[in-house]
Amino acid sequence: MKVVVRLSIAFALVAIISGSLFINVNAESNNLNPQQIEQVRSNCVSIKNTINQLHVSDALLRVNMGQRYELVSTKLMERFNVRLTSNGLKIDNLISVSEKYKVNLNKFRDDYKIYEESLSSAIRIDCQSQPSELYDVLMIVRDNRQRVYEDVKQLVGQIDQYRAEVDNFETSFRTARGQL
Image 1: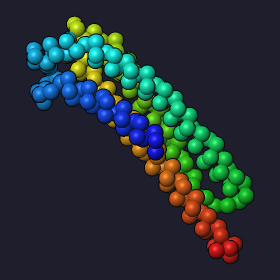
Image 2 (image 1 turned 180 degrees about the vertical axis):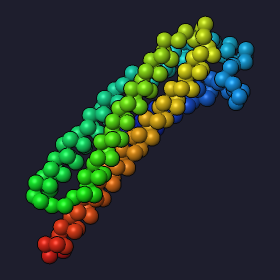
Image 3 (image 1 turned 180 degrees about the horizontal axis):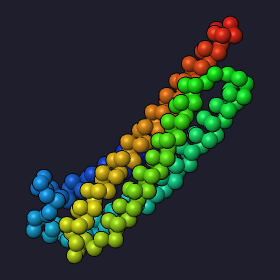
Image 4 (image 1 turned 135 degrees about the horizontal axis):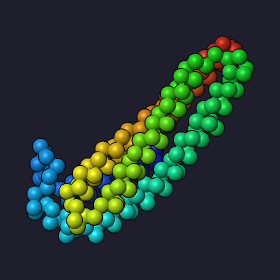
C-alpha cells in the first residue's frame, strides 16, 4: 500500500506542476497565450528542477516497485501454484488470478517505459525557447503517469484477489479434509 501512496504523491506533484503553471489553457487547443508563455519562461529553472527531481525519484521508485511485484509473481504466486499443482490439487482460480497478474505486470513495465520516455523528452525540451512544446509534452507525461498509476492499482487489487483465493482454497481444503 505504501507504493500506491508514493505513486499518488508523485502523480499529485505532476498535476500540481502542470496545473499551477498552465492555468486557463484553452480547452480546444494546447497553445499557450503570451502571458502563459512568459510565465513558463520565467519559471523555467524551477520547472526543469522539478521535472528532474521527479525523474530521479520515479526511477528509484520504479525499480523498487518492479522488484517487489516481480517477487510476488515468481517467489510467491508461481511457487505456491506449482506446489499445489504438484500435489494434485485443483487451483484454477489461483492460476487464473496469477496469470492476470502477470499480464498486468507486463503492462505496468510497458506503460512505465512509455512514461519514462515521455518524461525524458520533457527534460530535453528547452523551456525558454519552446514553452508550448514543454506544456504539450507535460500533458502527455501526465496521461502516461496516470496509466502507470492505474496499472499499480490493478496489481495491488490482484494481489488482494489472490490472497482471497488462497483463503478460499484453504477453507475448501480444510472442509474436504474434515478439519474445519
